[in-house]
Amino acid sequence: MTARLPATPLMAPLQWPFFDQHHAALRQSLHAWASQHLQHDANEKNVDDSCRRLVAALGRDGWLAHAVAGPAYGGRHDTIETRSICLIREGLAWHHGLADFAFAMQGLGSGAISLFGSSEQRVAFLPRVASGAAIAAFALSEPQAGSDVAAMQCRARRDGNDYILEGEKTWISNGGIAEFYVVFARSDNETTGAGTAGRGAKGISALIVPASTPGLEIAQRIDVIAPHPLAHLKFNGARIPAHYRIGDEGGGFKIAMATLDVFRTSVAAAALGFAQRALDEAIRWTKERAMFGQTLADFQITQSKLATMATELDAARLLTYRAAWMRDQGHRITQEAAMAKLTATESAQRIIDAAVQLHGGVGVRVGSIVESLYREIRALRIYEGATEVQQLIIARELLKR
Image 1: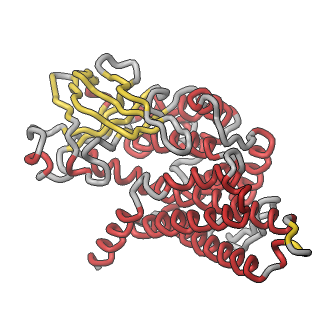
Image 2: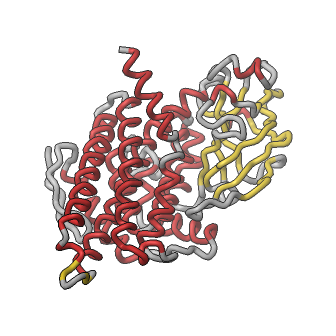
């Protein structure tokens, strides 16, 4: 069924073939809720406390139920519905960048449990994630292993009914405030270093690590241009019960990639929200800004810039919701998700830069909306696979055919 999405103060109505009727209602409800509960704040004073409050509010009012799978575990749907995740992220990003981050990390941090966890693991963790009572985190990257998972050196050594974790993780979102981490580590018998790297993605397992585990250390908090809770973690003999392993031993790479496939498309959706807000702010500003006896919007050069911004945004939106729709139909979307993430984030960077330029001096004033958008968008071109990594993924998929 095709639904015409309702007009809102944020976006013109658009006819999409990718949505059902309930998506129109979801989008409208999200904007109504966010307008009431979220206010733009370019300079969060305490990002940890802000994230905790946002997670609690998102859980209390039912939005986090979309980020986990299974009504029995607090989820809205039997599976994680990508279109709903994307619509929510696009709307939250328009209103409040940190709210989008808080929502997304709950989904990413618990995604492996939703997709591959045992019934016991789902019962233990997902309801608390959905209610906002527990903050989740996804720990894959390492100092020498970001996009190159084969270089992973963090190890999980089997010891009877436990695993002993040794190693480091970095750039971990929600690091320092999460109640648990889904940690990916080598569980084979290879030693670390070049020999391990040579094994590629084999021998990696996924483990749920409660934040209270002895031997888990928040070694360093990481500050970035758009304030988000990030940290460097160290594991010094952290003992993890084997029943906290997600899926099969050695199946961690598949688990990580499947989780990223779901949420990589939603990164594109967040970029759409940032870009749409920038375009809306640019339209409002140029219609109000008086210059040489007319408004800035009256100049053809301004109209050309606005037209280019809107066209790039729509093209990115089509790629994003195509990928989301395809996954919800059960298709593998490795290439489509990469195309959406690459196009949406790169286009959003250009759109936001253009909005800053149209605002002139006001656009670079700390605390202005377009200035904060400029800082928010930059990280999206890097995390969950940088633009260049998306290009490699697309090329590899093409060459397989």
